[in-house]
Image 1 (tube, rainbow, N blue to C red):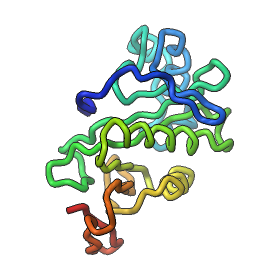
Image 2 (image 1 turned 90 degrees about the horizontal axis):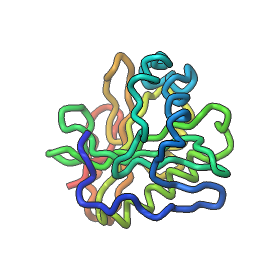
Image 3 (image 1 turned 180 degrees about the vertical axis):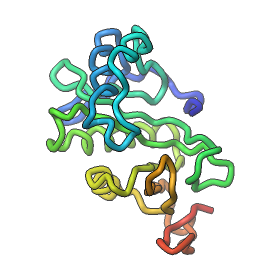
Image 4 (image 1 turned 60 degrees about the horizontal axis):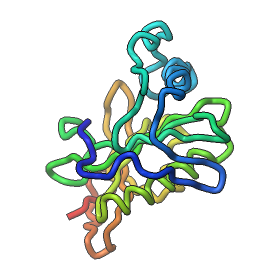
Length: 197
Protein backbone atom coordinates (compact mmCIF):
# COMPACT_ATOMS: atom_id res chain seq x y z
CA UNK A 1 0.00 0.00 0.00
CA UNK A 2 1.15 3.48 -0.73
CA UNK A 3 0.94 6.50 1.56
CA UNK A 4 -1.92 8.91 1.86
CA UNK A 5 0.02 11.74 0.26
CA UNK A 6 0.74 15.13 1.77
CA UNK A 7 -1.14 14.87 5.05
CA UNK A 8 0.20 16.41 8.24
CA UNK A 9 1.64 13.66 10.43
CA UNK A 10 1.61 13.06 13.26
CA UNK A 11 -1.65 14.82 14.02
CA UNK A 12 -2.50 16.09 17.45
CA UNK A 13 -4.18 13.26 19.37
CA UNK A 14 -7.78 12.84 18.26
CA UNK A 15 -10.24 12.17 21.06
CA UNK A 16 -13.56 10.39 21.26
CA UNK A 17 -15.76 9.99 24.31
CA UNK A 18 -13.64 7.09 25.63
CA UNK A 19 -10.59 6.78 23.40
CA UNK A 20 -7.58 8.64 22.06
CA UNK A 21 -6.39 8.12 18.49
CA UNK A 22 -2.71 8.95 18.26
CA UNK A 23 0.49 8.18 16.40
CA UNK A 24 2.39 5.11 17.59
CA UNK A 25 5.38 5.15 19.92
CA UNK A 26 7.93 2.69 21.26
CA UNK A 27 5.65 1.92 24.24
CA UNK A 28 3.16 0.32 21.79
CA UNK A 29 5.51 -2.38 20.48
CA UNK A 30 4.29 -5.13 22.83
CA UNK A 31 0.64 -4.44 21.95
CA UNK A 32 1.43 -4.55 18.21
CA UNK A 33 3.06 -7.96 18.71
CA UNK A 34 0.08 -9.13 20.76
CA UNK A 35 -2.36 -8.02 18.02
CA UNK A 36 -0.59 -9.87 15.22
CA UNK A 37 0.14 -12.99 17.34
CA UNK A 38 -3.46 -13.35 18.53
CA UNK A 39 -5.35 -16.34 17.06
CA UNK A 40 -8.66 -14.49 17.55
CA UNK A 41 -7.45 -11.35 15.76
CA UNK A 42 -5.91 -13.46 12.99
CA UNK A 43 -9.09 -15.40 12.20
CA UNK A 44 -10.02 -13.32 9.14
CA UNK A 45 -6.61 -11.92 8.19
CA UNK A 46 -4.69 -15.07 7.34
CA UNK A 47 -4.07 -16.37 10.85
CA UNK A 48 -1.75 -15.33 13.66
CA UNK A 49 1.94 -14.76 13.04
CA UNK A 50 4.50 -16.56 15.21
CA UNK A 51 5.44 -14.46 18.23
CA UNK A 52 9.19 -15.11 17.82
CA UNK A 53 9.00 -13.91 14.20
CA UNK A 54 7.17 -10.77 15.33
CA UNK A 55 9.72 -10.12 18.09
CA UNK A 56 12.43 -10.03 15.40
CA UNK A 57 10.45 -8.17 12.72
CA UNK A 58 8.44 -5.48 14.53
CA UNK A 59 10.44 -2.22 14.63
CA UNK A 60 11.08 -0.27 17.81
CA UNK A 61 8.31 2.17 16.81
CA UNK A 62 5.77 0.05 14.90
CA UNK A 63 3.11 1.53 12.66
CA UNK A 64 4.75 4.95 12.32
CA UNK A 65 3.20 6.23 9.09
CA UNK A 66 0.49 8.66 8.03
CA UNK A 67 -2.92 7.13 8.55
CA UNK A 68 -1.93 4.57 11.23
CA UNK A 69 -3.63 5.45 14.49
CA UNK A 70 -2.99 3.67 17.77
CA UNK A 71 -6.19 3.37 19.76
CA UNK A 72 -5.43 4.30 23.34
CA UNK A 73 -7.72 3.45 26.24
CA UNK A 74 -6.67 4.92 29.59
CA UNK A 75 -3.02 5.14 28.52
CA UNK A 76 -2.68 1.70 26.91
CA UNK A 77 -2.91 0.60 23.28
CA UNK A 78 -5.96 -1.62 22.69
CA UNK A 79 -6.00 -1.57 18.89
CA UNK A 80 -5.22 0.28 15.72
CA UNK A 81 -7.11 1.95 12.89
CA UNK A 82 -5.44 2.47 9.53
CA UNK A 83 -6.15 4.49 6.43
CA UNK A 84 -3.95 3.40 3.53
CA UNK A 85 -4.15 3.53 -0.25
CA UNK A 86 -5.72 0.37 -1.70
CA UNK A 87 -3.28 -1.38 -4.03
CA UNK A 88 -4.41 -0.90 -7.64
CA UNK A 89 -3.47 -4.52 -8.41
CA UNK A 90 -6.01 -5.94 -5.94
CA UNK A 91 -9.65 -6.47 -6.87
CA UNK A 92 -12.20 -3.99 -5.60
CA UNK A 93 -12.15 -0.33 -6.58
CA UNK A 94 -14.53 2.58 -7.02
CA UNK A 95 -12.17 4.53 -9.28
CA UNK A 96 -10.65 3.12 -12.47
CA UNK A 97 -7.12 4.00 -11.34
CA UNK A 98 -7.62 2.55 -7.83
CA UNK A 99 -5.62 3.94 -4.92
CA UNK A 100 -8.65 4.79 -2.79
CA UNK A 101 -8.25 5.40 0.94
CA UNK A 102 -8.99 2.08 2.65
CA UNK A 103 -10.08 1.71 6.27
CA UNK A 104 -8.63 -1.13 8.33
CA UNK A 105 -8.68 -1.90 12.04
CA UNK A 106 -7.57 -4.47 14.61
CA UNK A 107 -8.43 -4.61 18.32
CA UNK A 108 -7.22 -6.85 21.12
CA UNK A 109 -9.87 -9.53 21.90
CA UNK A 110 -10.24 -8.43 25.52
CA UNK A 111 -11.89 -5.17 24.37
CA UNK A 112 -14.22 -6.66 21.75
CA UNK A 113 -17.95 -6.07 22.13
CA UNK A 114 -17.70 -2.66 23.81
CA UNK A 115 -18.20 -0.44 20.76
CA UNK A 116 -14.58 0.76 20.65
CA UNK A 117 -14.10 -0.22 16.99
CA UNK A 118 -17.16 1.78 15.89
CA UNK A 119 -16.13 4.77 18.00
CA UNK A 120 -12.51 4.77 16.80
CA UNK A 121 -13.29 4.08 13.13
CA UNK A 122 -15.95 6.82 13.01
CA UNK A 123 -13.45 9.32 14.41
CA UNK A 124 -10.72 8.18 11.99
CA UNK A 125 -13.17 8.63 9.11
CA UNK A 126 -13.88 12.18 10.33
CA UNK A 127 -10.11 12.83 10.38
CA UNK A 128 -9.83 11.45 6.84
CA UNK A 129 -12.67 13.68 5.62
CA UNK A 130 -10.76 16.71 6.92
CA UNK A 131 -7.33 15.54 5.70
CA UNK A 132 -8.52 14.30 2.28
CA UNK A 133 -11.69 16.24 1.41
CA UNK A 134 -13.94 14.51 -1.11
CA UNK A 135 -12.01 11.24 -0.94
CA UNK A 136 -14.20 8.12 -0.95
CA UNK A 137 -13.11 5.58 1.66
CA UNK A 138 -13.37 1.85 0.98
CA UNK A 139 -13.44 -1.19 3.23
CA UNK A 140 -12.90 -4.87 2.42
CA UNK A 141 -13.66 -7.79 4.73
CA UNK A 142 -14.53 -11.46 4.53
CA UNK A 143 -18.28 -12.03 4.30
CA UNK A 144 -17.84 -14.66 7.04
CA UNK A 145 -16.75 -11.93 9.48
CA UNK A 146 -20.16 -11.03 10.91
CA UNK A 147 -18.77 -8.40 13.30
CA UNK A 148 -16.95 -6.57 10.50
CA UNK A 149 -20.00 -6.73 8.25
CA UNK A 150 -22.17 -5.15 10.98
CA UNK A 151 -19.56 -2.46 11.64
CA UNK A 152 -19.31 -1.62 7.93
CA UNK A 153 -23.07 -1.05 7.79
CA UNK A 154 -23.03 0.99 11.03
CA UNK A 155 -20.28 3.24 9.61
CA UNK A 156 -22.29 3.89 6.41
CA UNK A 157 -20.39 1.70 3.95
CA UNK A 158 -22.40 0.56 0.93
CA UNK A 159 -21.68 -2.69 -0.88
CA UNK A 160 -19.97 -2.30 -4.24
CA UNK A 161 -19.13 -5.92 -5.00
CA UNK A 162 -18.09 -9.31 -3.70
CA UNK A 163 -15.19 -11.36 -4.97
CA UNK A 164 -12.91 -14.25 -4.06
CA UNK A 165 -9.52 -13.35 -2.57
CA UNK A 166 -7.23 -15.17 -0.14
CA UNK A 167 -9.41 -18.27 -0.50
CA UNK A 168 -12.55 -16.60 0.88
CA UNK A 169 -15.46 -14.48 -0.30
CA UNK A 170 -14.71 -10.80 0.30
CA UNK A 171 -17.20 -7.96 0.77
CA UNK A 172 -16.06 -4.64 -0.69
CA UNK A 173 -17.85 -1.39 0.14
CA UNK A 174 -17.49 2.36 -0.07
CA UNK A 175 -18.42 5.17 2.26
CA UNK A 176 -19.08 7.91 -0.25
CA UNK A 177 -18.26 11.50 0.58
CA UNK A 178 -20.01 12.82 -2.51
CA UNK A 179 -23.52 13.95 -3.18
CA UNK A 180 -26.07 11.37 -4.34
CA UNK A 181 -26.09 12.96 -7.83
CA UNK A 182 -22.45 11.85 -8.23
CA UNK A 183 -23.30 8.21 -7.60
CA UNK A 184 -24.32 5.92 -10.44
CA UNK A 185 -26.63 3.24 -9.01
CA UNK A 186 -26.07 0.67 -11.74
CA UNK A 187 -25.76 -2.94 -10.56
CA UNK A 188 -22.21 -4.25 -10.95
CA UNK A 189 -23.06 -7.96 -10.72
CA UNK A 190 -25.53 -10.38 -9.15
CA UNK A 191 -25.13 -8.74 -5.71
CA UNK A 192 -25.82 -5.22 -6.96
CA UNK A 193 -23.84 -2.26 -5.80
CA UNK A 194 -22.71 1.13 -6.93
CA UNK A 195 -19.80 2.78 -8.63
CA UNK A 196 -18.72 6.39 -8.31
CA UNK A 197 -18.41 8.28 -11.59
